[in-house]
Amino acid sequence: MSKVIILAGQEFVVVAPPFGKLRKIINSMNKIQQFSKEVEGGVMSDESMTEVSIILSLVVGKTVQEVDDLQITLKEMASAMEAIPELCGLEVKEVKSGEAQA
Image 1 (cartoon, rainbow, N blue to C red):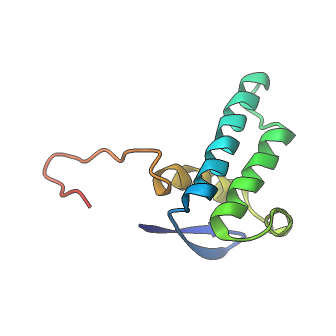
Image 2 (cartoon, rainbow, N blue to C red):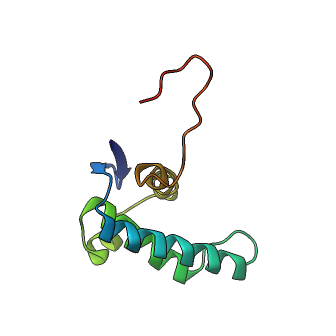
């Protein structure tokens, strides 16, 4: 399974990560959830943004610094972070009646 995510206007074809990267992605997602409980007003903390950089770097095959240097919009970040759990098999896409499963 692969997906195309767009960061800084660039297309990245990403595939399901190997288990070692998956563990790191899940760890970072858990940290984001913990940090989000500590921040009010829906604003992401610096710690959460650091974890987002780690996740994106693992998925697109760049270093954290290379990801941080990209001019990523918030919309692109949100879209990518929405696609990653499904790509990793962490979210089950609901199959509508009459649709074939992939």
